[in-house]
Length: 417
DNA sequence: CGTCCACAGGAATGACGGGCGG
DNA sequence: CCGCCCGTCATTCCTGTGGACG
Image (cartoon, rainbow, N blue to C red; front, side, top):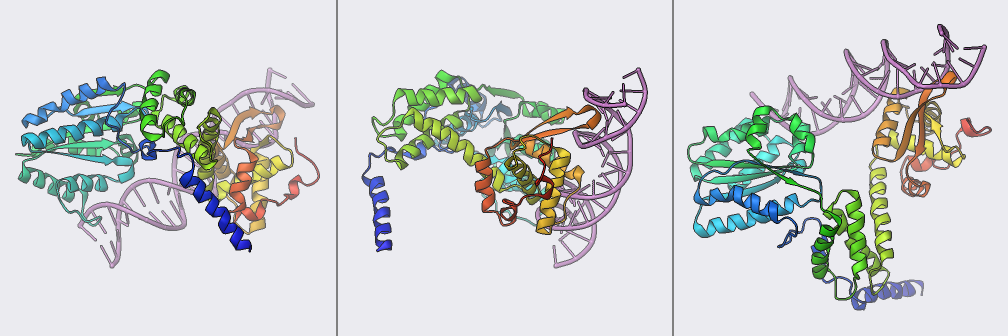
């Protein structure tokens, strides 16, 4: 009986989904990795890149290019689009041309970046075991043997440089000197505008023979992009102009991040779909904004190291005891007690102070250095996220869940200052 | 106006684990 | 496969400091 009614309940949800208004026509269009065939307001960058790269069609080497701009400004989409067309054209005219796209942050190490470029040449590289230099030699040998011109796109290259230094980039940028028949051209993409300062000047001058800048989109530009995608993604009549404008305005107010705008639109659509509404409204967009932010925070909290969680839990408990702002010393005291209660060795105050700073950087806490005069110099700490979120995430936690309702002795009678 | 609190936060060093190179 | 090395996290020790109090 009970299970029967539950089944009906589910049946309802599924039916609603299947027969409902059908918010989406094709939601893939709104996903971050979708490469659209038309890129509004990037004509200038498209033309410049095509112009820079075009010489490869005649078999000559093109300049290396350095592309930079903030996240969601279309860098990756533009370069992918240009390369697709270029390679296509190259194959038509028989130019010995190949391209290789590597996301350096995802690859993680010099070795894996190199092995990805080798794959583009059809070279098998074991996932580990070889020296980087050896892989590089094989890479050059294969390139020479095939008389290829290889375009290497290194996306999020700043991440690799920060982690591993610029040796790989240095080697790649002077690879042509040791090649007889093959050629490489580098296309570096970076989100970080200041990252040039981390580069060896020789690498920098070689890599940025040409530079292309992607400015953030303005609100009207975002609007155009959204309208174009929305046409493909949503069914007729479920979207109003107001909804699209709102998404554009919100994203423009941040960093002109198109990815963010598209996310908003997609999540708003999903909310409407889930609630069985026929139209996406401004309210859905606003809820989407909250949901995206909340999902982000939940993810961050879940993946925090244990001691960071305990520190945060301590501050949460203090807030439960109606202490809105606490100072480092008190936080440490509560934290130590929680550790004792769980039978865990507490970290030192110095380390906890560091953890508090890390939590501040990721926005979970707000802190401010203050002087209490006679009573010393310390740091004021308050929660930067709603208590409900912390409670929800930590209740499920193996360790922290056990102290979430614990009342620390040092808070029992008096409230502190 | 000097003192001195209660930390901030830098530097050096140690413990550990995982990946790299031979 | 093993030793080495490197990055990460933590500890120890340290110097610096804004301002209420006396």
